[in-house]
Amino acid sequence: MAPRKEPKSSLGRTARYYRENPEARKKKAATDKKINARPEQRAKRSELTTRNRKYDKKYGKAKRAGRDFDHATGSYVKSKTNRGRKGEGAR
Image (cartoon, rainbow, N blue to C red):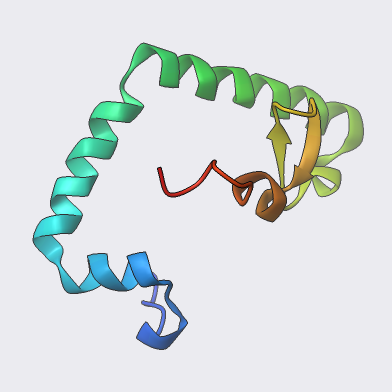
């Protein structure tokens, strides 16, 4: 069974747009698929998976919960901090 949809009021601006425009959503999905199939993206995912697995083995999954690896500082930081840096989003 599919997960329940979030109420429209709780969605961000972009999520609302894609929910209301299914053609645009399909186009974005196709673009994302191409991007994620690139060798450099695959290598990046592989590197992060390996790094996360090692970290979890050493410190436990709970220590990494809600955190991303920050390549700038070389450590795990909150996802909000890592993804919200100036100049890194909305390219």
